[in-house]
Length: 177
Image 1 (cartoon, rainbow, N blue to C red):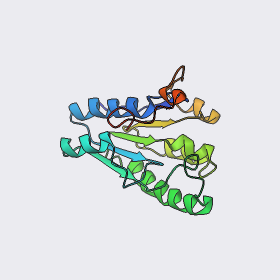
Image 2 (cartoon, rainbow, N blue to C red):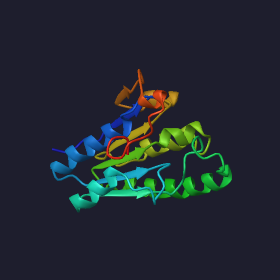
Image 3 (cartoon, one colour):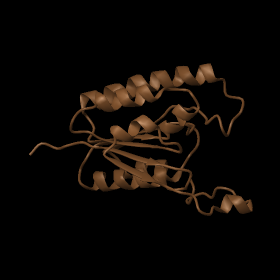
Image 4 (cartoon, helix red, strand yellow):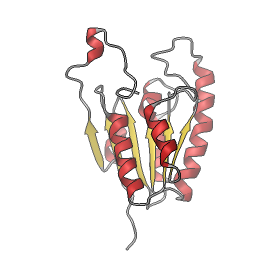
């Protein structure tokens, strides 16, 4: 029986999009699947709990970070430089999706790149159209790109109702990162 790879989108302003995607990665890894996670806007030098855990798991899950900070959090970012970094990233992602070496590909925070005008909706649609038929693709980020609705098989909105940041509580190691 041939595997069917679908497209899942986790979007919204609430906490839990990356956590949901990584939970799915852990589930797939448990069943012996090969996973690659492309993290947009998470600097290479930022050590997070998920990176530490994946390093301990060993083979089967690979994380690729592009070293680009999110323009919302770092106003010093030059858009042209960010576009160049992300265009190189798109080439690597295209290859990983088309060749089909991975059962699960996660594009963590790629929707934010569209929202910041660093890549286009068309770039994401092209990735979906050209992916291997057996590869499951997970897309995350805050905004939902409207054209994505017709290409996604699952769409889940993560809605913020209440967040500790509103009380001045900063991100906590092991919980938010």
